[in-house]
Length: 155
Image 1 (cartoon, rainbow, N blue to C red):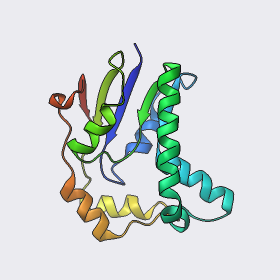
Image 2 (tube, one colour):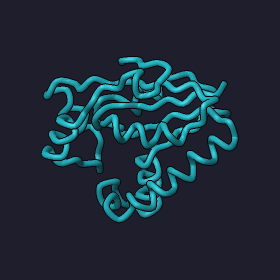
Image 3 (cartoon, rainbow, N blue to C red):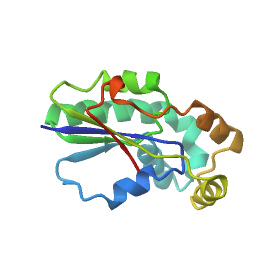
Image 4 (cartoon, one colour):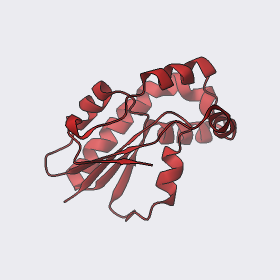
């Protein structure tokens, strides 16, 4: 049975770092992420993530959705690496996942303010204004099994 893992947490909570430390079968696991697409585009252009974000997010979202459909068609395991902050946004994404997938939410608690600032500052070329981060923290709803997940894991 293929697995769909939705990461849930604000920027700097450790989602991408967690993925990098996992021992997934990378021959059959696909990471679905607008950030990865924007990072690649920025690198190709010799610019930073922040430089290209506003001009690239729409195309990156469309590409991410195509990548998701291809991964499903191939029966790949999927890691959805975005913030996925609200039950409503998660429901829209879960509705695209076939019933034969095991659905797991991996929730990343918000680090304390000092640690969060350290983590966000450690990402050169990727700046998220503090008011945006504060808004994300206010919106964050921890995932529940009632949303349609088979399992919820807190990291």
